[in-house]
Length: 167
Image (cartoon, rainbow, N blue to C red; front, side, top):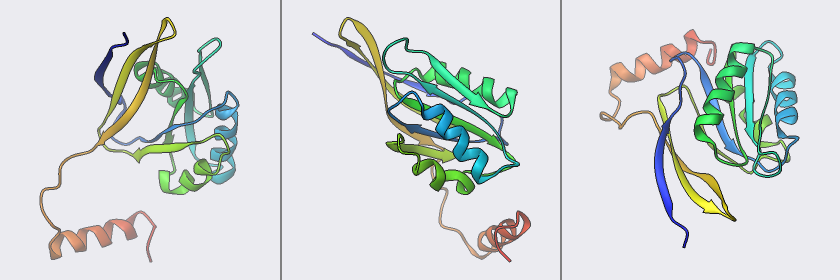
């Protein structure tokens, strides 16, 4: 009889790094994600890791920043769920690349796109004599502390202008 265990895996990264975590289905994902990132924000720095779910079951990785590539590999190994990918980025935001990533033919779904402290809820079970893992969901950031007031609204509007996303 199969048993399932659950665990929380914290994403390891510094506060200033954004990432996208998703599920995909084919070994060429890592190359296609590289092209999507590079074609969308050519000056962005990124590292990508993809967990192969069959065959050699390797973590496949690419990127144009060695530090972010190693960070992606480390977090992919910690999560260890088949057919998942993680992209860490600098000099761009998930909103710059999210639609391009969603349009990669192999991408099935996105679990999160954030810079927040994040934990991944992983289920582990035996699978045909081996062990398999899957992502059930993520815990992204903190619980709301109330509804924004006028001061909070002013801060939000100023931030969006300061980082160049609003006039």
